[in-house]
Image 1 (cartoon, rainbow, N blue to C red):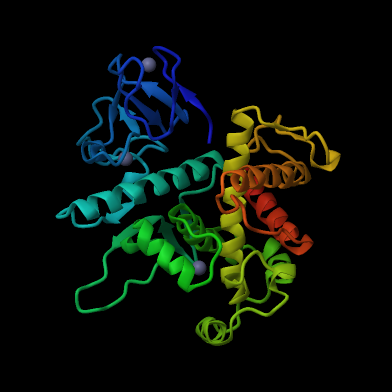
Image 2: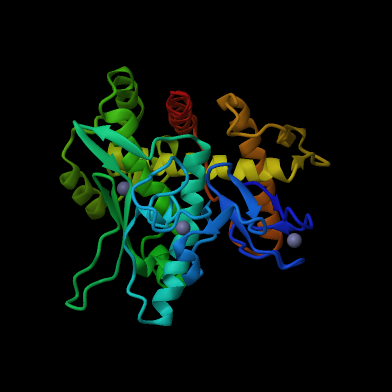
Length: 352
Ligand SMILES: [Zn+2]
Ligand SMILES: [Zn+2]
Ligand SMILES: [Zn+2]
């Protein structure tokens, strides 16, 4: 993510701001130019979801209710921005708790969509002869005790809104023995399944290499998951996989690794935007200057050479504050090759 400033007074803005806290001008994010804009001159209007305080993205002025004029990155035709137009089910807004959950979900989702736009990935693809668009269902457990599964199916990403509650998520994290569990991480994982369909499954040029790196995805998925939940990951998982869950099936390995690719790219962009340099008093091997915008077709080896020292430095900062590690993962050689495969695929796709 970049650092933005108010066009009026140059005060820094967060991506989520809808008002400049210094000059009080209304501001919002334009998904076409990927910058923060002021609303002052009447060229833009907010997405319809701004009235619920869950979106600060902009549309060209006068596009509410226009109907049908779907433009790339701009007006979806019904007053919603490109990110909110992907919502099919939102939580029922009958309680403050659900409003808070929806807000948390949208913060994560908008950051996800930002990354997809930066990577110039397709938001609509042809998969197995059918058009597959990204759709979000934010679902609540039914009162009958039926549990909504977070997951992906033919472009539809279902998120159990319990995950938008900090306390619930921490409980799941502990129950499952995970070191990292965030809402943004869920979005990045699930969209990974979508991009497996989009970039790998029907692509004869890459499916062979995919299977070399991640394994053969034709093995029975539900049997594989059952086995994983029964006996867990093999003891040496971290030499071959980014997480224990990635061992469950080649599709899950792909989605887990994909999520880490998005973590790395977004965080490197933020570090680049702040001009971060790692220049330690000792440990020369940790020197790194993040001098290139990572989305600007940067060579993968350079990205990794910056990512590893950055993680070590920020982990150390977190430990100084008594927090858990910022990035509690080890990237083995094999995992780095999987990330490289994803990087090259994204470059090829974004260039098309
Ligand atoms: Zn301002
Ligand atoms: Zn919106
Ligand atoms: Zn998955």
